[in-house]
Amino acid sequence: MEKLYYSIGEVSERVGHEPHVLRYWEQEFDVLDPRKNRAGRRVYTEEDIAVVEQIRALLKDEKYTIEGAKQAIRRGKQGADPRTQIRNELRDLRSFLEDLRDAI
Image (cartoon, rainbow, N blue to C red):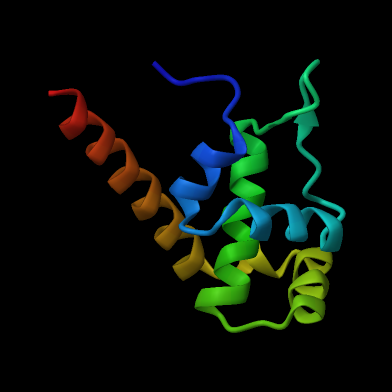
């Protein structure tokens, strides 16, 4: 069963970056704006996680600078690169399979 909201720790594990990196990306990228719960903690939806994975792919896989990644997101470049889409889908599948393995 898929959760509706994920903590910053869960998201950081999923994408392989520390929580402080995600908080920094929030400051740099307008498209990344997770909600906060009543306690003031960030809660990420699947859509937020997709944005985080998009940013991670641009910065780490495709070696964009922060400014270049911002421009690519504005231009919608991410959707034009099918390799990145496939990488993200494979990463999601791997995460699902690891969760399934741990549940067994």
